[in-house]
Length: 169
Image (cartoon, rainbow, N blue to C red):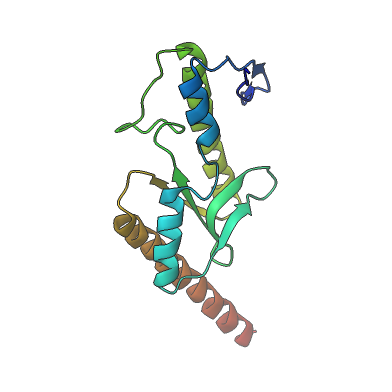
């Protein structure tokens, strides 16, 4: 039985037909690949929760069909855990030999979509934090925790300034 991979939809709207899996092993690996709740995502979420941070999971990016892996909506902080293969990690990303042109186009389209998502979030007043799946969860957790602290301080300062402004009216 042959199963086809999903179609590649580029930012331009053009869709490239997905090639057939190059082998039964490749097909099995592709079907087993999780889209959400990956090991890296679960490890980071567990660590953040253990630090007392509360967040939303798979939160919808405003005005898109895209989702944030870990979101702190009140702080407008979005955390993405990017897979090395799917998002073209400069350290660990690999380029398949079979169907090479299709995969290069697919991975480059993912990178373009990531940049577009980050841009849209910034325009909406959010901060995006990107974590590679190969990063140590402790290191990634410290980066996210620092971003949460920074955003919380900025939000708190903004509220104090707003309250002070109202009192002076």
